[in-house]
Image 1: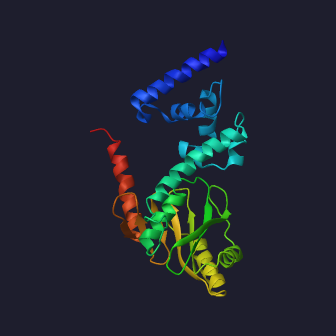
Image 2 (image 1 turned 120 degrees about the vertical axis):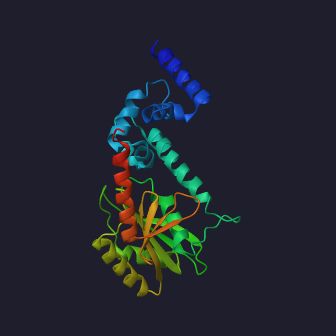
Image 3 (image 1 turned 45 degrees about the vertical axis):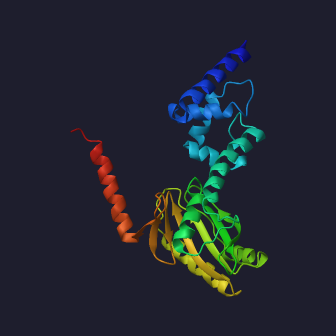
Length: 261
C-alpha cells in the first residue's frame, strides 16, 4: 500500500511538471521531483527539506561534494552522484557557450577570463581554488582544483600551483577562486596570495595572467583592478569603488520597493 501511495504522488507531480513546467514548483518541490528519479519507492519530500536545510538552497545541494551529500541521512552514493551531476551539467552547458567550433576555449582578455571563471564557480557554496593552464595561444589546456576551504576561507598554496603548471607544461596560469558571499571584492590576503603565486610561477618561467575572484555573476580581475559583470549579453565593467557604490545603490532600491506606497 505505501508503494502505491508514493507511486500515485510521483505521477501527479510529474504530470504537474509536464503541464506547467518548473515555474510551478517551489525549490523543495522541484528537488523532491528530482529525487524520485534517484530513489525508487520512497517518499522524497522529507529528504528534499533535509537537503535544503543542510545546504541552504537548491544551488547548494547540486554543487555540494558527493561526500558532503552522503552525510545527510537517506542519501546514498548513487543519489549523491545523481544530485552532483545536475550541478555539473549546468556548469558544462554554460561552459559550452564559451567554446569555438573546435571545442576549444580561448581566454585572451580579462572579460573572457571573467566569463569562464563565473561559469566555473558562480554556483559553488564553498570557496574553491582552480588553476587554469593555458598554452601560448591562451587556449585552456586543463582546469584543476588546487585548493578549497570552508564557507568563508580557502587555502591557496603557491607551490602546488607551480607544480601543476610544470606538470601540464603550461605557458601561463589563470588563477580563479570564489567568494560564496557573492561579493568579489578582494581582501588583503587575496592580494598577498596573488603576489606569492606570481613570484612562484615567475621562478619557473611561467606567467600568471590573472587572478579572478568570482562573486555571483561578477568577477574581480587583479590584472585590471576592475569588476566585470557577465550576467547580460554584454559585459559590464566597474572600478572597485564604482561597483561598491552600485551595490549600495541596489541595496537601497531593494529596501525602498519593500516600503508601502
